[in-house]
Length: 533
View 1: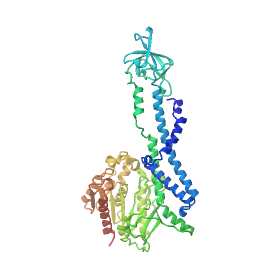
View 2: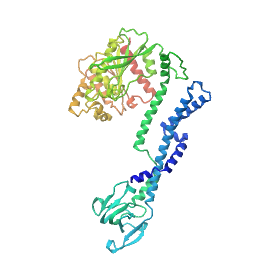
View 3: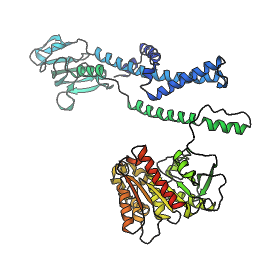
View 4: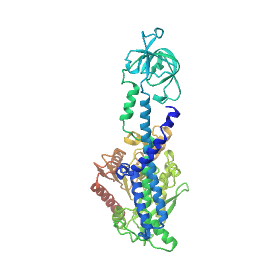
């Protein structure tokens, strides 16, 4: 297809039809097929209704009607532009089919009388050619049928059919002897033997495919859909946080009130607790933040049972969130909860993640240990009362914490963990994580992995606190063999250990709410037994 042909696929009629279709596609039954745009459509309807109510004086608390309607306008513009882009893409597909059909028009064929150019030809309709007939095409002729060049050499324009913008050379013999019906000879001449019957040429099949195909999304459209899904999630999360931001704004301004329209019921009594943020200093001097949820009247005597959670990998940010389970089972029982923002996560962008990749990963473990030491230094807890929890990549963090600093904790909940770092890349999805951990088959990276691998660093005679391992038989991401062999090694060394393997549930180690409740009950029961009197 030439540049001119491509431009012809975006014509004024296509644009006009696209504008009309953009409004027709506002039908909610059409919008519902695309969840992302359906959310925007719902937001447009609601925002418009609120804006009109504000104009009519029916919504005094809606704010400035002009601002609300401006937001509605932007939302409607987003929906209409998405509809228009989709309609234009559909129109271009129809235009392509029409362009292909135009090349199928009846052309005249110069069928050779005896198969040789010197003996002359008889002009016939192209649809009279049969497989095995020979015909002559000269400069400016349209090739009437698919075939093989048997004599001559010529320059051929195939843009109308194949999309190849530059002319191609066709000659007898070799890899450049095939010609396609509907293409055009630019110079010289060719004698061609037809290789297809009427109605079965490449062009016929192409037209049938274009006309009968259902349009699928292109890779760019799929990528855009993923991006829009993420932005939609961000939008929804932003609306969820409106209440706390509003409360902060009123408190900061010292004026106004916040009126809560509705809320889900609380899952535990949080009135007696406070959330604070502190910073620990890691071994290399990096300041590592962490959040603490604790009773308002907590005494800093190191006696508080404390659960420290960490992950530290794959640029996953650990941010505060409401947890009814944690509140009911741990905080209401007098426990303190700590969330560490160690390197390897995404809390401070890609650099925070990349600081702990491959052979630099020890800084992640140092950060976690530094947070634990800072908790003890502040008098919040003590090694006797400190427990830790982490899963998957966080399970690796727990395993390293057990082997490198067994003196810092008295309980470890190690969930669906990676523990054998010399063979992880040979188990299930492990090979896809080598950009994060390194390749055990590379000597320099293997040497580092061997130094941190929890399975390879268990030592006889070390006083390890008894850990609690959780895994799943059907985990299709981290092989349960990691946990199994580690526990078997601890038993072989005569060390106390607890182990729970659920036969269902995949990487979450629970297939339904009942199994999830049982797993969490086991975990918090273990933590209470180890950390509370």
